[in-house]
Length: 297
Ligand code: PRT
Ligand code: ZN
Image (cartoon, rainbow, N blue to C red; front, side, top):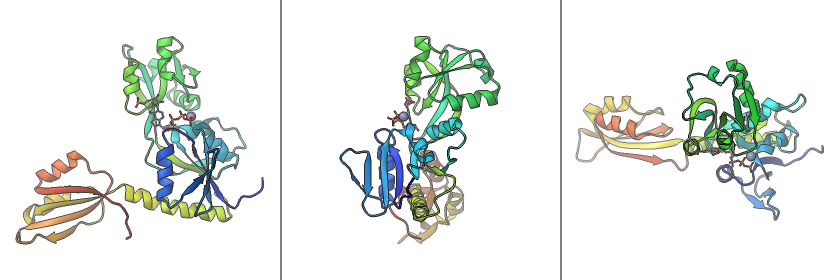
């Protein structure tokens, strides 16, 4: 295959991962001109183009060298890795991307007794992820029959084509609607930036390194929150001890109230209601949690 001088990233053409993946790439400073057939998007500023495909095709396109990187669910990537034949390029997760979160789980009919994996012995399990399921069954030393279905896995027990299922779960609503109960989590998944273990040694490798650096910056900012609060000097220690991880907070005086301080802290990650309530109990008030737009240390 002729070496390419432009980087090519595969992503889902139309589905759950499409919008957030494009938004993430845009935030990394990559913009694209969409072609008429909408399969190929030409990168406008940087030499990075997009190939829009079905998510299931993404790992194969990278393994064949048609694309250099891909944005795909860990579930799809690991399933591919479980089925890839010798000779296919080894793929790896370059970065977890923090969207498209879900889990691959075993779910059983609500009325079925289930206490442990061995209860699945002799059962038929419907799934779209046979490699991942077979790997788990083997590790658990369970002898069950895997029924591979392309979709609508959740209705298999009602149709009688399987006894239990192994499918992606997010809110759990689909399971409840089908009178199923989640019993085991096989894999925690999210969208990842996937690529070959060995990066290209030409300009594309340099471009990938640049992209990874920008991604790290974007992800760090996206997960950062600025916490602002007011506290008395006497409560300061108790309040500071409860602050979510991050650099040392900044303290500012409050005009006209010498015993009060304004505290400003950068937090790595979401600050939950529960955390806020606990910090408040320790003596804080006037609390604000703000998203961070850009950061330049
Ligand atoms: O056409 P193409 O093949 O590209 O799309 P697709 O239909 O295969 O994929 P799509 O867009 O449905 O999902 C793309 C990826 O999003 C998946 O591979 C996962 O990595 C991720 N993802 C995150 C999910 C879900 N959440 C999810 N809830 N993928 C599927 N679901 C389905 C699940 O299969 C089940 O039917 O939603 C249902 C469960 O949802 P809850 O909220 O009811 O639990
Ligand atoms: Zn798919």
